[in-house]
Image (tube, rainbow, N blue to C red; front, side):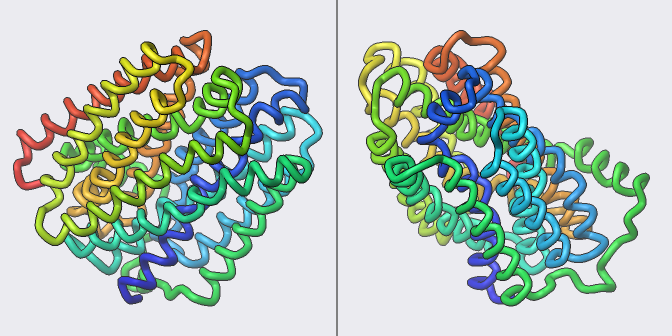
Length: 393
């Protein structure tokens, strides 16, 4: 496929993951109240989603290496649609958790397969530019989702949000069936043997040139998914914003990510991947420091929370494509497994951050000002160590 078609299809596939977070973010306190759950129960809907998302990629990648990208993608997104409908009809927290589990299982195809489709066709800076385009497309749904979610709450029930998710999943299935071409030729497919799958994953985990960029993805995106789970409780429950005001505040996050992707896309014409990662680390350091200081000094100020969020999003725009391309550069022969493992690390970071927030901290703000700075410091240490050992990556 052309680079543009690959980026559009990959971007819409990947968008489903954040859409499943940001659309119902404004409704999370209402869902907790309607189902008679606690705040911890509401956060658990995120944790279950992250866990299923992370683990199922380890299955999705090898399946796509055996059967091709298109059909595996369509099958997994069908599971996502089923999960969305279960959530829409959920009368209890337990049923909602089941639906979120199915959503996480199905949506894992977006990250794993979009990266594999890029790696099947492009390498080096071409791959970085396409992944940057994917990231830019990725901003569209999260940009409108919180506003759309708040409008749905104003007009009626939160159940409709999950119907919208099901519709988006059906649209992705149609796009894969009618608009995509298979990027993995039959002669390049590998048998689906459990021993070989485990061997491939073991090879990736034992290779520092894969593991270090994947850890940077895990830590930096873990921060993003961590504050995505915490922000509704901080801005709505603690600061007192209405769902619509929350949606407006989230536009700061979206605008920062769009700006970061535009900057990263232009800088990719002049800088290589390691230089882009260094630029992202600078923003990450500022964002981590902001989380550690600003909400403590000004606990009731929206900007004290959202400015560090915006810095973190600028960092992700620079780090994400370059770290992904670096991790997968030498593993084109097992691109499905490599794409799945990078996705596992990325979503595993979200699972790790959300578990820390639930288990170790009494409230969302305390979790945010503690976990986010720690993740920033760890990401910077890992990235600099990798740069020192592998200067060209």
